[in-house]
Length: 450
Image 1 (tube, rainbow, N blue to C red):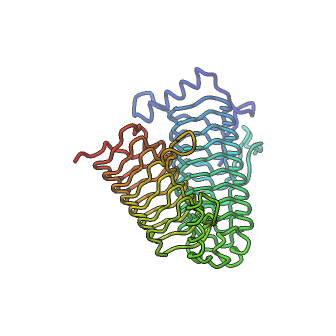
Image 2 (tube, one colour):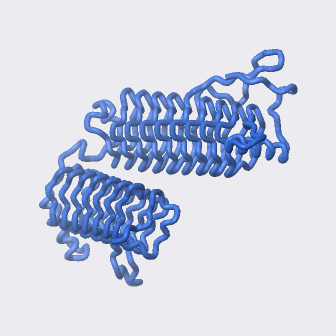
Image 3 (spheres, rainbow, N blue to C red):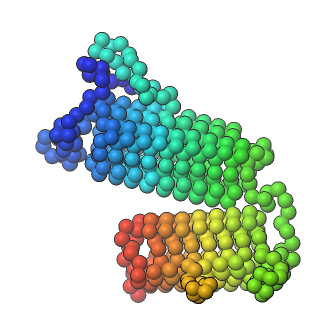
């Protein structure tokens, strides 16, 4: 990619009025109005400029300086940001769908809630020419795109191309990275806690020291990836996806390296612990164990520790799991019908396709001397396609939860916290929603009557 330099060889800086004219002309172009003209801002200095909320889709920002620019909720769909300098820019909630970000520098940028679906963030070489056609270097240009130290909570990078990128110490907590191409990327010490990486290509990448706790890696490819000290506890990984060498150096659930303890003995000790209010017996600790497919109907594991446990297809119907800690647990297709889940911790647990019909996930009442309530916590839980018909979720924390295509008919959601939740395709006929604000909840529709 090449672009001509201006006469003095410097990046051009527009005055406020000039920039406003460019923005207005670009908006008229996109609207098909007379006098419209594309925003041609290649090799312009827009550093520290506030462009929040502006419409810059399809704009030419090749090689532009946007360091520390404020681009909150800015529309940049299909924009050309080839080789742009976006260091420490604020792109919170920006839409960069199909944007060309090859060779761009995003070091330290804020990308939380941004949309980068199908964005091209591969390496690129940016050349700039003087008026005599002599190439001159671009000071911030890097051979590979730099996404190091960015914050991208809940960002959507589905189908994005990020191969060979430098992504050191980047925070992708709860981000959506379905089918992302990260081949050969440097992902050392990055955080993917609770992220969705279904179908991601991570072959040849360096994930050493990275945290993928609770990440959904179904269908992900790890061929030749460096997983030294990679934290994969609580992650969803296909059987056989990792080589034996990778398993040896990564942090995996303890069940991978040892036998499951005697459950009868453990449950007896837990019963004694519950009955004696902790004076006898021992609290059950089933964290990181593989209990998938087991018959645990009506089991009493109230207040037990089951963090990062593997309980896929496990029958826990009518079980007592009140106040239990199931954070990051794998409960795909588990049966929790009519279970007592009052005050349970299911933060970032994966419950896709689970049966929670008739389950009680209301608060535990009158806790401690202050007689406080203890609500169930399902924040950022993955409940897509789950059956919650008739379940009690009164006062539950569901912030950021994925409830797409879930059955919420006749569900008690009164006073629940649904901020940032996804209810796309959810069935809500007969659901009780008094006391909650459904505005802004993704995919929500007014409750059906009858």
